[in-house]
Image 1: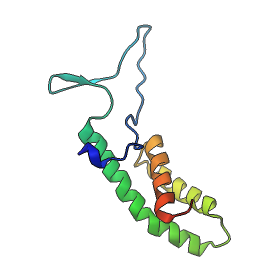
Image 2: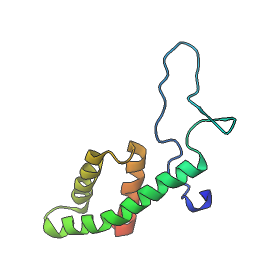
Image 3: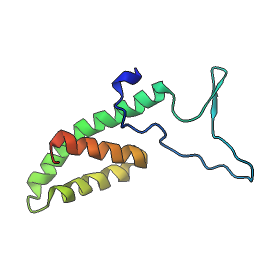
Length: 109
């Protein structure tokens, strides 16, 4: 499964913040093992969601660019990003990855 997930896709989407003076790791007990960050399955699921969103946003960005031809590509992508961030479907690092992926799909380098 993990072979399908691009290497540049984030591994840790939400840093933990734990109070106290002693060093701590935020982990979960899964199948008798402590896991810090996403499991490979969770990472695949998050990537799959982000990839699907990027594919869907291609049409949105193209419509936005057609509707407002006076806007630069960067402005168009910023508008799409704001819409995505307002929905709160992805973490900040996932949104960064998703927008880079969208730019690539649109070939707006």
